[in-house]
Length: 221
Image 1 (cartoon, rainbow, N blue to C red):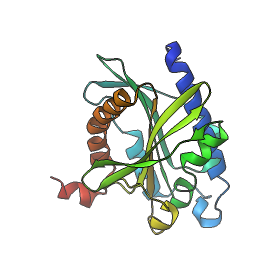
Image 2 (cartoon, one colour):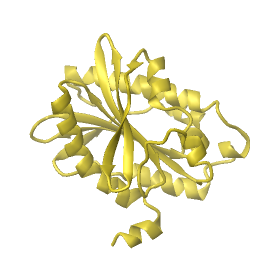
Image 3 (cartoon, helix red, strand yellow):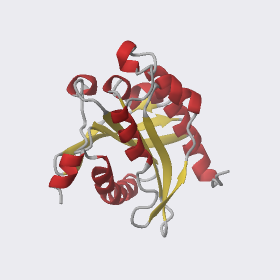
Image 4 (cartoon, one colour):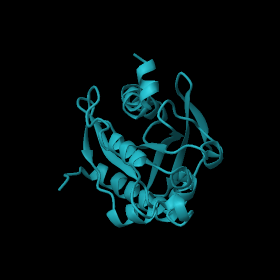
C-alpha cells in the first residue's frame, strides 16, 4: 500500500478520477482494426514496454506508483501506461506524471478539457509551454472549489512533444502515439512554474531517449 501524506491524497484521488474518465470515454471512439481486438500487435507492445520502463528516479526526484484501474485500461484499449507521483528528495515538492501509448485514435481522442471537466473541474485558459528545441505542450489550470490542478500535456511519437490542436488529424498516420500529462496541485504561480521547469528539465530528456524510435535515438548520439 502506498503511504500518502494528507496533502497528497486529494491530488492522487483527483488524478485517478480524471484518468479513469478519459480512459473509459476514449474506449468508445473507434472500432474494427483500430481496436486491435485480436491482441496487442508487436509494434504497440514494444512502445508499451518503453513506457513501462520510464525512469522511476530522475536527478533528485524519486517516485511512487499510482495504480490505475485495470478494467478502465482494458476498455480503453490503451496499449501502454505509466502513472507515478514524483517527489523531490530535498524540497519535497511533488508532481504526477501520466504517460500512455497506443493507436492515435485512442490516445488523441480526449484532451484534459474533456476528461477533467467530467470530474468536476473547470478548465482555465490554456497556453503553449516551450519544452525545449522543437517541443511544446499545452498548460492550463483546472479548477474546482476544493483544489486546482496545473496540468502540462502534449502528444508525440517519441522524438518530440507537440501542443497540437488536432492530434487525431496530425498523427492519423502514426502507428503509435504517446500522450504525457504532468500534473501539479497549484499553490503559488511562480513557485509552481519553477517546480515544473525543474522537473521537466530533468524528466523530458529521459523520455526522449527511451521513447524515440531507434533511428532518432541513434542520430542523437
